[in-house]
Amino acid sequence: MHEMALTENVVEIVLTHAKMANAEKVIQVKLKIGELRDVVDSLIEKCFRYMARGTVAAEAILEITKVPFVVKCGDCGSEYPESIGDCTQCRSCGSRNLKLVSGKEFLVEEIKIV
Image 1 (tube, rainbow, N blue to C red):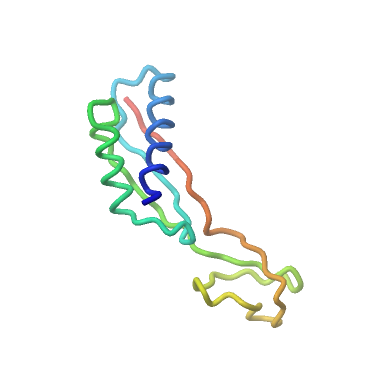
Image 2: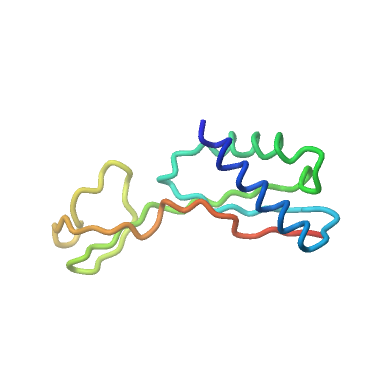
């Protein structure tokens, strides 16, 4: 369950920024998580609730936005969303020279405080 370690980092980032801003309360945390991260959103939420209890982030709304798995062909430049496990060659030219554009993200996009 790597959700625990990932969420621990999120809570640490949130609390550090809240402290630096002298926040009374964290009201919302927005995360961007790529489809290839293989995490369970509900576990991220549960871990966040557990780790944030008793802190200024205890009642924060956690919003998770999924980032699609997108590849780009290094030969023809085509860029398109792909299905996990179904990415072997370019849909346009057949090349196998594919580069990952998005889908591996795991980041704190925004922290709203008061």
